[in-house]
Image (cartoon, rainbow, N blue to C red; front, side):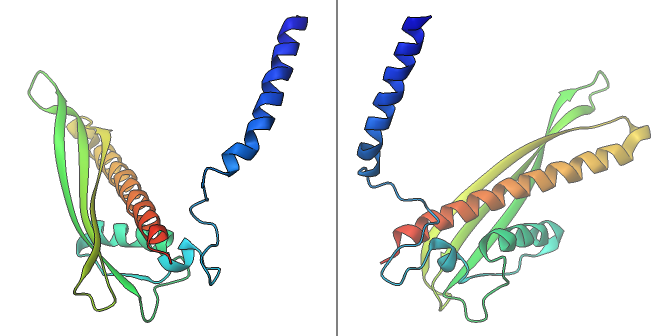
Amino acid sequence: MVKRSRRGAILTIGALAALPLLSACGFTPLHAKRGSDGSSVNDRLASVGIDPLSDRNGQMLHNFLRDRINPQGQPGDPEYILRVDLRESTQELALRKDETARRANLIVRARFALYDKSGRNVIYRGNSQATSGYSILALEEEYGTLVAERDARRRALTVVADEISQRLAVFLSRDEG
């Protein structure tokens, strides 16, 4: 018992001694204020205008992105413009004896590009994909299937919005002067 507590104390002392070394590694939190003007990556994200997307799924993604990128509202004169091309597909899994699906994966793919203020020059582009599964119920329970599919879509769009906003934050933090 004494050996264990002594070993724990030695490990604790060793970890505390290593802390100054970790601070010298150059790690800086992504959302910390930095740069000569004291701005943060959040300030840069707030200057991104998001182009509208067509259809209901696009509107949902647009709203999720807006909540993450510029929660104070779209900038009047954006420094950057984000354009997203959204695609969705369904993959049926787990077939019943009558060859109807019992389970499905909803796959959401987004290609996005960040443009400069003019909207003509791409300064960053990327892809994001999310898969969300849901159960397909019997025909008598079609409403349950619709609700499950809607929830799967919302989950997938949330993951895509999170990934796009995080990747933009990393890019904009690297681009800071």
